[in-house]
Image 1: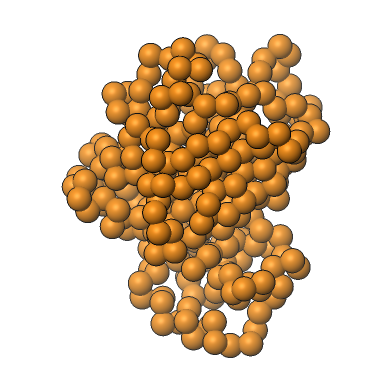
Image 2 (image 1 turned 30 degrees about the vertical axis):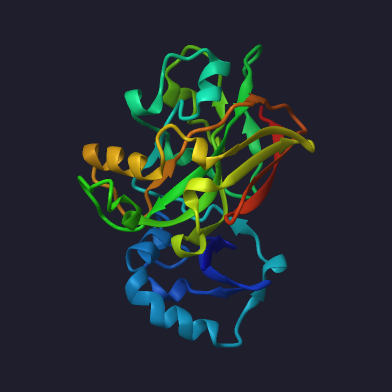
Length: 277
C-alpha cells in the first residue's frame, strides 16, 4: 500500500490513480497541532487494516491529480541520518568518517518538506549547498535493542528523501537543518511492496542531468545494521525516519534548478530549487 498526506494533513491510501481518505481512522484530525496523525496511523496500522480494506471497497475517492501531496510524516519523534555510508562518496569527499564507525546524527524535524514544496536556498554568499539522494526507512513499531535478525520487522515502509546540506565547517546538524532541507515523499510505500530493499536503484538528476546513481546493495551499513545500531542507542518509535546516507555525485544547487529523485519500487519526486531572501 501507498499512504499519503495531502491537502492540509489529511491521510489517504493510493488506489490506482485515486486517493481514498483515511483521516477519520485516527484520533488526531487533519487540523490537530502538532501534526501527528500519520504517526498515530502507523502506530495503529495493524488494528486499522480491516477498516482500510473496507474503505478501499467503497466508491468515495479523489483523483490523485486533484490533490496536493505533502510530506507523508511531518512530526516524527526522530529524524536519524547516517553519514558516509557509500565508499565512493567517502572518497569524493576525502572524508575520514564511515557509517559503521561513526554512527548516526540527528537532523532537525523542522527541515522536513514535501514533494510539492521547493527547496529554499539560504542567502549565504560564497557557500555551496549540495543535494544528497537517499532512501528513507520509516519505522513501524516501538523497538529498543533489537537484534540484527529481527531488525527488518521494525520497518513500516520506505520513501524518497533528499538530504540538503550547506558545505562548511559548522556542526553538521546545523548545516543540514535549514527549513526545506529534507524533502520526503511522495508517499510511504509499505515494506511488503518493496521486494528487495537491499537492492534498490536510486537516481537523482538536476535539470535532466544524472548527478547521482547507486544501489542500496552498495551501502556500507545496510538497512538491518542501521536499525540495529540506532535502536542500541535510542528507543525507536512508529514514524521515526532513518536516512540511509548518500552515494557519490553530490553537487551544488542553484536558483531555478529542477531536482528529480527516483527510487525503484518507492517513487519519484520533482522539486524546484529557489533562492531565499
